[in-house]
Length: 227
Ligand code: SAM
Image (cartoon, rainbow, N blue to C red; front, side, top):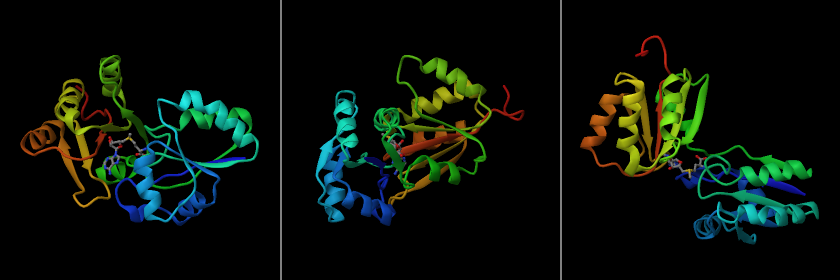
């Protein structure tokens, strides 16, 4: 009667922990966001535990049945395509349902994209706000207005095709001198971090192809950058 939340690598397979591998081998069932993506990882590490798909389109329907099985004594591990489940990935619904039902939840420490991006940004990381993805349409302006006033460092996830639009909007709302750090392909071969003011970083990405996965780390509002 235990649910493990198991982080998996965000690029570099060496980042899986010994404990994650042991748990994935020992549980009765692995719940995976994408069984094909996770199948490759599990095969690579010789894990033969049964796998069931658990993603944003079936999680609402599946949770009651999973809770029943957990209460009957099953142990399960939840994994997502990359990083820590529940962090901009499915995980919250099942975790909340387990807690309500008295099922123990254990989250293993492990890979997630926002921590390395925040730490290498060089921006204050003693206090920060994780914002995940900005809403694509509805609620976007309200969120941007709110972010412009936030005094803590902010961490955002973004896709390459929306990067310049998002940076441009952040500049409109936060001012052109606000500092930002953009990390891409963390833990992978072409990992890099571009740091500068919003104007400088926009110019960089207008002149370089934008590929791979990205994390944005935005400086909080301070006396220095008050508009
Ligand atoms: N659960 C994941 C975590 O713990 O970070 C996040 C999943 S979310 C669906 C995917 C987003 O995470 C990507 O669009 C990107 O913003 C960020 N991301 C994931 N892997 C990354 C990497 N290797 N480098 C930079 N950003 C990454």
